[in-house]
Image (cartoon, rainbow, N blue to C red):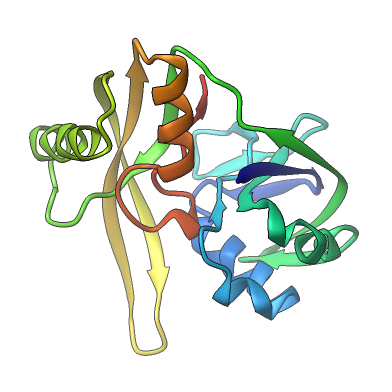
Length: 194
């Protein structure tokens, strides 16, 4: 069973594109996260400044979608100070939430292998919905990029924001459990209520 583990985030700012740095910081603080199966780490919420950063506030949250078996280990992140890129954050006040059905779900960024434009992403999303036996209406919107760093190189991957609507209760839970596309450890294909 998957649940959402929510941490309040204390800090001032983060880069808008902080996903890879966040994952790296979490793994550095808790190395076992690297081997946890089914883990999805969503983008931290904040107010965009339109200059490549977000401002953090009292509503800023880190959502980790995880099998319930990992909650005790992940709770060790509570109180940790993490370096996310050039910024520092602290994780506070953890709470557990069950996945709840919703008619409409959103993902900030969906990345599907070999899909590089809106049309190919829409086709890829529809194929994944079909393979999951999920009925929903996908809308592809903003083009997004993510910076990835490997030991030998740094590169950018392209994805798109996706909204799924007209979901049944069971289909919305299926999407939240499985996601769409790849790279969920860095916040891609993680669907939450809009």
